[in-house]
Length: 243
Image (cartoon, rainbow, N blue to C red; front, side):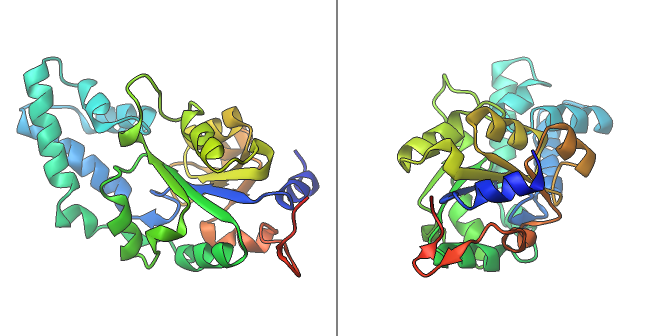
């Protein structure tokens, strides 16, 4: 899709959905790896670092229980590993790693003032989301709805499957062509395309420009702070320019 076509589509957008890790937050990727190392060490399972990273990145959008099950066979050890993972995940050590990606809070504030409906579809555990947003200066109440992989029904699959975005679109009564999803991973782009929304890739997380181009991202931005300058915020006398 040409840049001109994308910008034309953007003028009809009224709903913007965000991933969190790698889009609004920084510092969490390595913290997640540390949680997995801690969990595996707790049950005396040794995994080479390159294998650990390769497997986790392949299933980055899945729950930590599923990720740990890639390395642990028995249920008792898996349960103990999950407990150790969550102990580290919900610790001050993890939350202290969270930093704002430059421009994130200002961008969210501007988009809200312009009248866009904002939402979240993320792999971050739902218990962490409110405090994490506040820590970078964003009021969680600014988002109309939020869905985390930790809240998915047992029979629903996470990214790259479109369920999370389809649920948000239904909740906000928004057609796919009036929404965009902003993510930092291959699975984010795949989910956006599967749901029929505009796929915006940022290069502040788990995806290179080459990967973003290969997956067919509609827009590729260096960071979330570049979102408004490319034309996403289209104002008129009533606020938004809608079709």
